Amino acid sequence: MGALGAGMSARRRANAGFRDHEAGHDPAQALAERKLLFVVCAAGGGSIIDSFLPVLDTEVVNGEPASLDVYPESLIRQPEGSNIRCLRNLSNTSYFTPTFSMEGFLQNHYPDTVVLTHENTSVNHEVAQRRAVTGAGIDSGRTILEAAALRHGSDLLLPNCAMATGGYIAPGTDASLPRWARGEIVADPLMFASSTHGYRGVLGAPDAALIERARGVRRQLDDASPFGQTFRDSPLRQQYLSLRDENQAGVEVADLISKLMLVPQDALPSKFGLESSPIVDLVRETFPSMYTDPWQAKAALSFALAYFGVSCAVSLSVDFEPVGTTSSLISTPLAFDYSHNDHRVAQNIMWGRVCLVLDGLIRLLKSSDYLGDPALGKMWDRSLVYVATDFGREKIRPFNSGSYGTGHHLNNGSLLISPLLKGNQVFGGIDPDTLLTYGFDRESGAPEPGSLMREGDVYSAVAQALDIEFAQRRDMSAMMKA
Image (cartoon, rainbow, N blue to C red; front, side, top):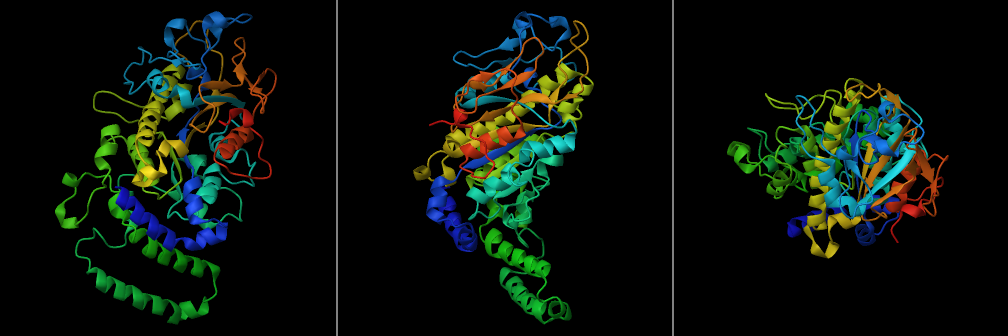
C-alpha cells in the first residue's frame, strides 16, 4: 500500500503542479505540512446538553429540575481520566436499536476530545447548517472545507469531497476561490469509484488504445467545429475542456476506480474487469454494515479518500431517512430533528450513530500511516474532526416527563476531536439553572459566564489548528496544543 500511495503521489504532483504554482506552495513542504479535516455533520440539531455536556438534576440550584432537560446520575457516565462526561444508552428507546454508545467513544478518545460551547445565529436548518461550516461568513464566505482544501490540497486530485446534505454542502460565496477547492459532490460512496474512469468497467467498451485515438480526434474537432470556432474564447468552454483533460490525465491515471472501490472482490463480477480497493478489508472490518448502512459507507470512503491522498477535506452527514432492518430501526426519521417527536430517544439514538462513525474513523486514522508511508507518520497526527450541527434544542420539558418533543434553540456547543487541540476539556461552561452555555477567554481558556461564542469562534478554532490564516480569524490560542 505504501508503494501505491507513493506512486499515486508522484503522478498527482505531476498532474496538479499548476495548482502548487498558483497557491505558491512547494510540493514537498505542502506534503509535510498537510492537515486533514473531517466535518461530521449531526444533521437536524444535535444537542450538546444531551450528549457531552449533560447536567445532573442535583446540580440545579435555583430552578425546577423536573421541568428542565437534566438527567439523574444513573444516566450519566464519565470514564476514568476524562474531564468530559456523557449520556449512556437509554433503555426506553422502543423500536430503535442503539448502535454504539457515547461512553464507548469517550472512553477511547477523551484525551483528544474538546467541547466548545457557543450560541448560533439561526434556527433555520439550511441557514444554520451553512453558518456552521462558514462561521457565519467570517472567512470571506468560504466554508471551512474550502479553506482547508485551498491551504492543504493544491496538489490533490479532489481536495474537497462532500457527502453531507443541505446547507453543509452548499458552496461558499467567495468568488475568488479556485474551482478546484470547491466541494466535489459524492452521491453514492459505494459506487463513487466507478465515476472516476471514463470506460473501465463498461461492458463492450473498445480497448484503451482505440478510445485514446477517439479522444484525440475529439480534441481536434472541439477546436475545428463551428461551435468551437464561435465560442473559442468562452471561459465556460475553456473550463469544461480543462476539467475534462484534467480528469483524464489525473483521475483516470491515478487508478481511483481501483483504490476507492469499496465493493469486495467476490462481489465484483469478473466480466467487468474491476478490482476492489487494497484497503477494503480494513474498512469493512471497522464498518461491517457499510453495504447496508449509508452512514458507515460514507465514513469508509472518507477514510479512503484521505488515505490515498485524494482529498484533505471531507464532509459527511447522517441522513434524514430512517435506516434499519425488518425487525428494528437503527436511526430515526429526520435524523436529530426527530427530537420534535421524541427528544431524548432521538438525541440518544442519533448521538450513538454519530459516535459509531467517529470511533471507527478515528481508530482507522490512528492505526494507518499517511499515504501508506511510515515516514509520513500516522494519519491521526495531522487530523481534525469537527462535529458540526445545525443548532441546539429547547432546554425545558413537561414536568417530570421523559418523553416529549423539543423545538429548535440557538444555544448549543460543538464537539472537536484532534491531537492538534488541548483535549479532554470543556471550553466554556453551562448554567445549571437555565441550561444555557456561555463562553470563555480565547487566550487563557478561563470560563466567562455571561459571554457567548459564535459560529466564527468555532470556524476560527478549526482554522487555527489547521494553519489556515485569514484576516478576521479570532485568536483561539487557549484551545491549541503547543
